[in-house]
Length: 614
Ligand SMILES: Nc1ncnc2c1ncn2[C@@H]1O[C@H](COP(=O)(O)OP(=O)(O)OP(=O)(O)O)[C@@H](O)[C@H]1O
Image 1 (spheres, protein in one colour):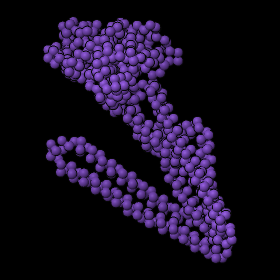
Image 2 (cartoon, rainbow, N blue to C red):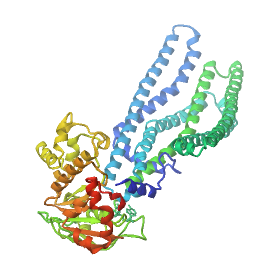
Image 3 (cartoon, helix red, strand yellow):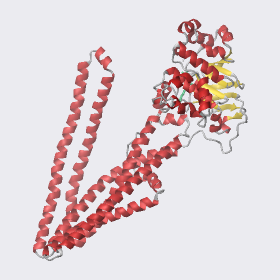
Image 4 (cartoon, protein in one colour):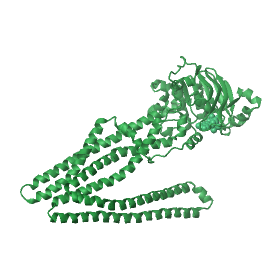
């Protein structure tokens, strides 16, 4: 896909960005399903969770025993501390196990989900990636899965632990001191409501403060990226003022947030410690009256702390569950998408041995994003096995669309495309593509070694076959000069190779694929004369004995073709050879003058000036 097409694709995408929360927790189903594959780990995690919650709740009872019985003298004191130590040991081991199992589960669920989504995506046709931009999907695969991972390994565990602590703690409080517990229950709303109200205000302000910071970031990026324009138009002072205003706005929101937060902190401390003081006061009166023991009061206060902490955490858990549900929903959408191009129930097999005949019959095709405009209109063309067809036409004529249909990346709305007599919609796309080698305009190389890249379409190929293909593609000499030969890492997208070398690797890949049909989109980038000659002779090798459909940008190619098909607005307008069509004075003659001007061609030794026409 060239840059223009990529842009078009990205514009078409309008999906929800990663990280957004869902309105309900229902999509979390996906995570539950994924966790079901590991029932033993789930059981172990739940057991550890219960043990740690129970141990946490046992701590106040330990303190009660120490205060009430440990300080009364005698040799007893050691026994109660041993009891407390035992609880601590159980708590430590239980927490370590819980952390291990729950985190393992989180990582495993996410790893499985990533693999599932990726497996599914690789079956999707190009149309899918026009609606869901690859950048967006990549962010879902990383950001959304990270949210899910965090939820499983922390939020769910925090939620369950706190539910157990809150319920168990409340019951224990009532057992310890029913009178004090009722008094406390009545006081809770007075403490919690103001905290919640202020808490929400602070959160809203934090969000708008983040938005203001993002504005500052965006403005920095924009202005720095347009520095030459800013300076050329003498707008430095205006940009300084604009930036200062944005920073001040962000500071004002931050200051408001800080004010609110200071008030909140004061109120929280006053309400919580005030309530505890009152509680202790009332408790002390009860102790003095001999109604309850000092140990009970201590245990009660510790339990209140645990229960309050548990409720506090639970209010935060819901928000993060909704965020995880949003993430799960977006992963689910990717998994639920059905490929629009799929093998029929009983696919028709293509004849063996393959001949490489291609036939378009009255094909009309519209891209889903442009339903009002036909990219191919009643297009018919029969290509004999072994024939080389050069396709020429102005930009947007429908040349690349032909390739899309031959490889069954898309199905036409009317008419048919056949390979070796079989209509493509009746065949398995994988079987069709097995007969095709594709050399795109911009060589697509993977960040791996040279061997991996050449072998891409024929993973079983031996080194001997790889070298033979490299030789035919004029790539042998430079490959042998690489420090580790075929094992040399060629960089991201082949960045450590020259443009011509990248093209020759792509050609070697197609030669090794050894398929009866070749779809070749000639590169328009100008190479120097020597590289051009090497690439051209590699292409000549590649085309030998194959049915070739080439989107032509070079004079040598159109001259060598058996037929030149001239396209305009999705139709065939002329067919013939270079000399006949040039003499006919039609569209080809006009394009050829711009694109394949022989005098310019000779002068530039291979630089075709193709940009003029495509
Ligand atoms: N993915 C797409 N979604 C919507 N419209 C598309 C898409 N791809 C191509 N088109 C439109 O279909 C028509 C034919 O496009 P195509 O890419 O086949 O032209 P082309 O002859 O290969 O052009 P170029 O030489 O510029 O690559 C154009 O009008 C183009 O805008």
